[in-house]
Length: 90
Image 1: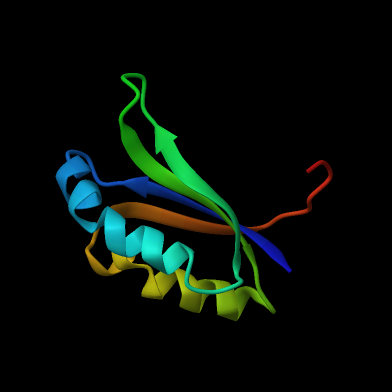
Image 2: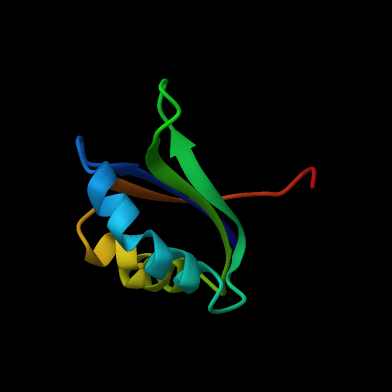
């Protein structure tokens, strides 16, 4: 099952994101679940959230993956949405 993880950072949390980015990127690469990933950007071009496409067995697996993300553990996100997704192109 494909799931889009859409996360928005807390206001003013760019330093938290930058500090935890190496561990987050390592986590993204640590297993087969992540199909695509990248930061959301604000009008100034600064990172302000995340978009990650997961390929997991079910929503419970997506929730577990999201909870174990170093960004989530660092308290970076104001919100996290997990949405079933259907790939049409790409």
